[in-house]
Image 1 (cartoon, rainbow, N blue to C red):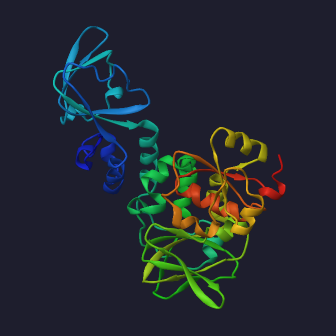
Image 2: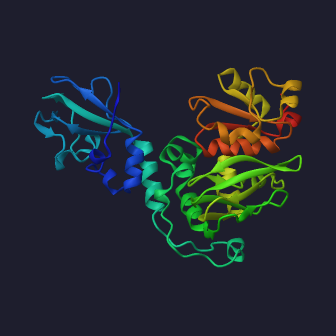
Image 3: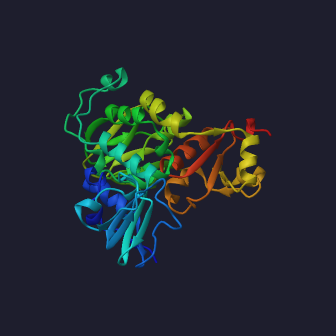
Length: 359
């Protein structure tokens, strides 16, 4: 059974020590202690390539090309650097005592360092005409590193967000506008045109839709959750209302910025022929239409999840699989594909939907 790494142990390591406390805690949940018995070579089976490997506990002998050696002791300043980054490079290693190592994927660490560096406190400024036209900006600093949900480390490192270039990340943070909101304030009204995307910095809100003359609650959103993307992704009117349940603070992104920095990088379109090849290799068809449509012409092996229910199923889908999302035209499935990609799922959108997605 793997042992998680304590955040306190990670804070002594370079360059992890430069991460915010929240990011270190996130990282600690994504890596584990590797125990190596005395007299064994910890790199006999798995070398340090593409990994940042740190000695956390115990004594490790490192041997160099000129036959010299040194003993490294876990927990000391000398052990703060990743073993693979030491100069000169060692050619052999042997555990003098039982030792504990922690291995961290280098790409994951680099992504976290990038996001953390760019996401520190900054004053929100209207970077585009659309943002400026939205009104005065609350200049209180927003520290994105404390956010959960949308910008959790797992989403940033394992989801499609991991592919966003640093320039997009920096621009994204710079273009969000910080807005204070009140309890019972309607943020989005069903039937309106979509003009903004929102992330909840603090507070809670409820998503409702009119059904048979009554308001039906669809979801309860909290700090770190995002909303407003469906109308922006599918170029449709708002299909639900969002109302604050408490006072809070929202981070608002104008439609043109959302399309440029999030929609296009996060939605990966695929042709029917490409999709069928992926399905043959194990990808899963995800049908986001209503039950009657699904029954009529579902694709072989497809899972049915109406796009209105996607938010309630994060965590129940297998993150180890690829998903090909489809509907009749691509409108509903584009919104579902965006939501899934945003939450760390490897997702493809069947371009044009079933109507245009002939093989």
